[in-house]
Length: 266
Image (cartoon, rainbow, N blue to C red):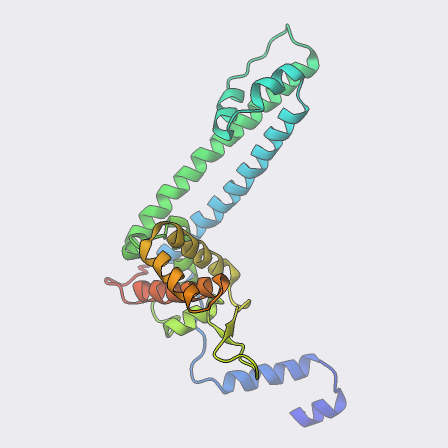
């Protein structure tokens, strides 16, 4: 059954029409997309990244539970703990001991807080282990990326996982489009040469670009000077940040794509 026949049979959306449209799009391309690598150092980095993210979520939940218990604790305990920092709170609660001199409620509250503090301490150790492993892998995969201003091991891991291997993103523009950092024209009859924010692409890749841009605005004099110059030209702060994300995407792609030796080893 041909495309026109399908369209005549069912003018609404259907699986057959979707299949034909997808096939025509693929046939019209000069180069097909390359899948991400699922072995070697990249896969090891992905495993550590996923495990670390889970440990961070668990630690955040445990800290929230511990602070909630401080709010509902007895007056004496609440007065002792309420003004402590998170690190001091975990250290203090981790030293709680059982005592028959306290009521059942007070004793159970302290023992529960001790268990949460020990859980947080264990998760801190696990996260530190993942950080060391990720840093070691990144020093082998993309050492130049780690030396770039504003890029740490977590953001670098996100960049490497999205980029995957040499040749996957055929150009820095393709990498920027993948990250949702490619500008979209917003020119109309009343405005000229303007672009709007691109909300497509891989948002997990777009977020670290934003973090790196903010870090450079805080710490890098050249980036702050660029912000001042573009603001003086009439651009808004959001437009300048978008330009920075586009520049960072270009820089990251070049560091990953043109490094030596080859980035991913099986």
